[in-house]
Length: 212
Image (cartoon, rainbow, N blue to C red; front, side):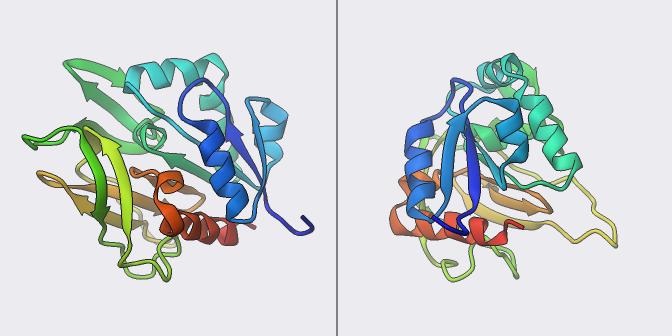
């Protein structure tokens, strides 16, 4: 696969790493599933999956020093993509069932329960991409697959020039919540691209196309 982007799917015990890897391969990437620090730092892109409880995901990430790997990549402007709870832990804190847990703190804000009588939010939903979104280029009107009860419901990071304004994509279930964020080298989706059929593959392809 000459010219294919090399992506590491961080294998730290959370998330369906193999379905994420297969989806990336379908999108045209050369994929390695590993927690090896050198491989994760050297790859063109790092995908951080995540399912389950916020606190448990943070514990598992720290156990393989995934927090340091993510921080180190971002400090060097190296792309990272977080999916589902892999997006949620990028925020400062998560509050689940009364448990307040510290996140990675890449973005300010709290992940909290959606104010909906029907939880989890499970199934296909539309999204509202920001103008100029690279991630949703050509798939702005598609539906994506969600499985979650918690989300970031506010965006608190104030980015000043010369840094580019983050592109925020919103969805709704009981209240508006962040479905995706594109913020320099750091990108994240609350939905599962790997479960979102052709639209998810195209979205991953758009992310791969943005990798240097």
